[in-house]
Length: 266
Image (cartoon, rainbow, N blue to C red; front, side, top):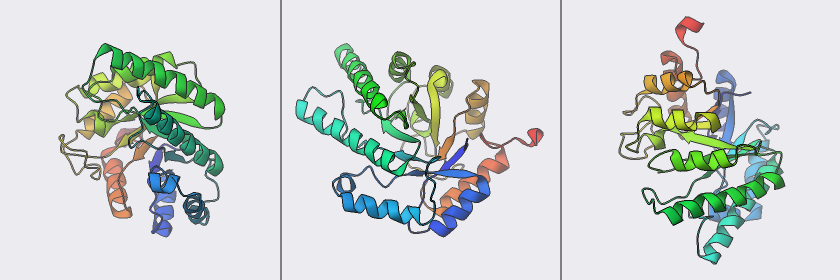
């Protein structure tokens, strides 16, 4: 299993493929979640064909599904209908490419904890993604925390869906660190369900997607928590561009940040 993922740059694939080979990385594609691409089948085919020139086996790769304005739990039937359509379009693209997994977001209103809203969010997402998981058994589905204020609601969904073999949590550690909830609580609470992770750096106030090590996040603490709770999920270094990705990987290797080996383990 690949332990590291990179976001490929379609315009710089020679260097991207070289970097991925050097560090044993797979790719997570960020080209397909925007509405203008989902509305244009020709554009989708063009993107897939471009990547196919460099990587003929997509089976270890993942992709980011639709998330902007996607609200499965909406009371508005039109918003709900379009949200479900966008998820299915993402899954169809994943199936067509043969990638192993798709990342979606919770889509919750952060900090809005009215009981009816939270119950509807959990009930409707559980019902819908159980259906999607059955329709696409060859693709993993990862639900990512966005600007959620705490991990408990997402953990509740994951617990309800724990018997769905191709459903799990994507912990975005950088997003989690923008909340007031401690990192230990995030990782401990979600640990049984984490199957994928995203990392990048920020200033603890804004979602900046800086290279790992260039912001204020405590990466030794991240490493300690992941190892403490025995998480073995792969990690996407979610920064854009070859230079930022190489810088992140070099920092992680130098510092022994998961999934890199620590010096004493070598």
